[in-house]
Length: 357
Image (cartoon, rainbow, N blue to C red; front, side):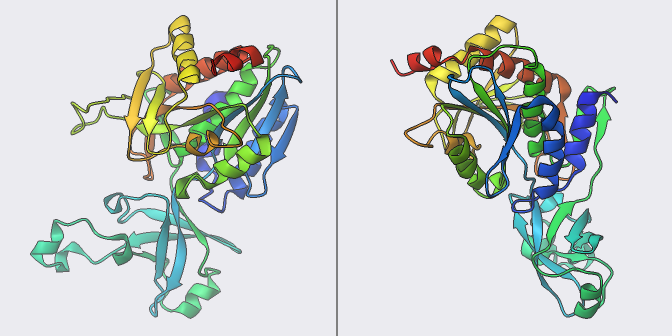
């Protein structure tokens, strides 16, 4: 396992749902420290490594997000089962019988997501999607007192229990939280590639918090950095699996980086978007374009910072996001890293000023 895959494994397996990103931030800072001039945090926990190419140059923000989808303990039933509330979007079908970790003040507790057995459901209910509020987590306790003795209490975060692994001889990466530890890893990788390289700006590369619950940390990190340009890196839904053929805007895994043209929170800035597309063409990197009105990225907040910050969202087509086991292409990641590195090297103050004419 080479250094890049080790980075993805470490970031994937560390735990951090929205509002509880401290373990991920600590791991990310460990990787940022050797490649950044300094590290800065906002008060919610967002973090960036700063690399100065030209002290008088524009401020460029490149960010993934630290948080992953998960849950929080809402209350304990009289028989010792845990009820929970989601943090981020979940499709209930992906959750039943899966293992989860409850992060308590005394350590991790393993549980299993359960619900009424199909054998006892009326026929009309068996074909329906089970609602999350009908599910519970079984940690083996039989009473609230036993739950308390195990260290679990309401407010504890709940994480998918899943290990990172590879497919096709390390050409595909798989595991939990690729949304969006892949974006975090890309910020680190771009800083790594800029070692010994000149760039006409100050790069702030890192990650936000609480993206999965409403792009909240994007606002605070942008306020810290006050960027002139922002690039958000996130995953997108891969359209290459059965049942998704013929979609209007197909984005397939292992077919190159995604450039988001439009989503529910932002129209990408045309000047910056064209710079990305032109640079990809120069490098011979295939790109895919996406229009998605069902969601958004941190760029949706970045672009409204201050008097306006030209922003674009890039990403990787990823299968099975918001589950215990997502799958993405290493080649897509490497091509995106190459593309973003070259775009950063072009972002001089003069080129940015040309966006406004």
